Image (cartoon, rainbow, N blue to C red):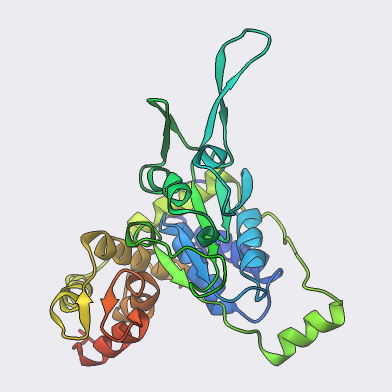
Amino acid sequence: MQAIPDVQADIHAAIDRVRQAVRSAIHGKEEVVDLALVAVLAGGHLLLEDVPGVGKTTLAASLARALGGSFSRVQFTSDLLPGDVTGSPVLERASGELVFRPGPIFANVVLADELNRTSPKTQSALFEAMEEGTVTVDGTTRELPQPFFVVATQNPFDTAGTFALPDSQLDRFMMRLTLGYPSREAERAVLRNGRIRRAKGPVALSPEEAVLLQQACETVSVSLEVENYLLDLVEKTRTDARFVRGASTRGSVALYRAVRAQALVGGRAYAVPEDVRDLAGPVLGHRVVARSGDGDAAIRALLLTLSSPV
């Protein structure tokens, strides 16, 4: 898959391989799978929020496997420490010296399972990694492998034993998605299988191919009209009475990157207003504070009042 930005057929074939690999592991959630793929290609991180037992971990694990490269899973619990995630110096018996032992964060794809079950101190261990792609321990900064992608799952905040993620942590996730309950036929397949199957699916890409696909997003053109539409939406979240607090600049950048990736996933070399509308909720809903308490619903209502370029 060489010169991906110049060969559209290779781009679409590679994207379709990842899509089919993930769909082979989780059924009936095609839209969620495509949105997750958009987050990957845009170089963002993904937060999956829903009740336990609806396939969050299955989606995350199958996506990680499809992308190839190294993979680690961290089960977040109340007694987990930051060093358990980032790694820490360990005394080596042979030499008597302190040697840094990398933690599970040093992987291409990291599954942070039930992130909100751990304390805010341990949650903050992900901040630098998600924003800068580096980890600093004892004054030494180390680069993380590329591509680097965090897929986190969380249970609803009112579930026993959870700590609400702070706004600064939420803001580092490009998208927040909800799977919802499966369709009747999808659940029938689970029943006939006898258990909730942890299907892995095939490997669809190498890490190098994943990086090339991310670079291909930079070639997607965004017209001035679509750009203005996106900026109008972000500015309205800061002035409209439905919102206590609007989207940050990080939010507008995330939406712009996601729009370009969505166009690529859709087989286009250009973005359209529908890309902005489709992604506004998943990208901005968890970044705003709405008076109703439901950021996604407030974003959808705002879109109905915003004039579209086409």
